[in-house]
Length: 104
Image (cartoon, rainbow, N blue to C red):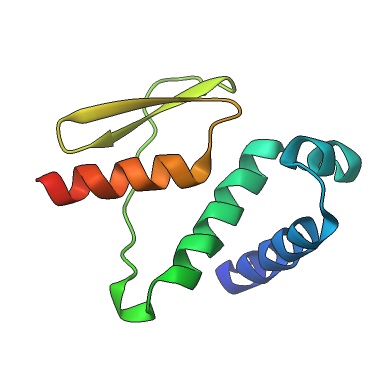
């Protein structure tokens, strides 16, 4: 699936979720979508809606190791490492990452 097709698919999913009135967990179970993916895309579109296109910056993410944890992941911003667990608040994480990015 091309990147633009993937973005359109997830934009439709996120819009449907936002209009549902359900929690991420409820909507994800009902529609057989991973909650982590829904959190990711919802936060991504929310952030893009807040920023002009000229200010959006993409970061390269490298996954190390031979297995991926489904219960937590780490985000490194400068010298800081943030451990993110299931059920995290994407807006809070975004605020922390922005604050750490401005601190450097």
